[in-house]
Length: 168
Image (cartoon, rainbow, N blue to C red):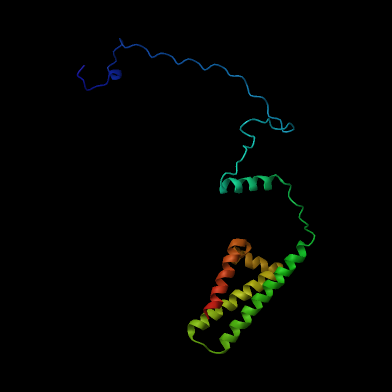
């Protein structure tokens, strides 16, 4: 052996054979899961007692006791009326935005104010078309302005329109 080749490459039959790995012992099968039976209670699932020796403990105690109370039933019978009122308010705000921006355009202002008024006019028209609930218009808006159908992006769009109207 010259010292540079590993021992397993030598082909020396004098090396001992590797010891076999013992087979794992069979374990008992877990019980079948049944959806009709309640979950077994254990120390891990039981709620730990809370102490109110600090502010965080008292807040957590309040949250835990509040979460134990059953939630109040929500009356959804007036939901269509609330949605209708919100649509009317959105239409009114968009109409006011269009009216103010057109008044700005009639006065022949500086080009930057004129462009901002055009943005405000088009944004107001977009909101008006969205709130009218006409299917052929909503389809076109959904295809080209899909962000208006997400509540977060619609809020950001309203903030953009507010900042545009604030700018002129």
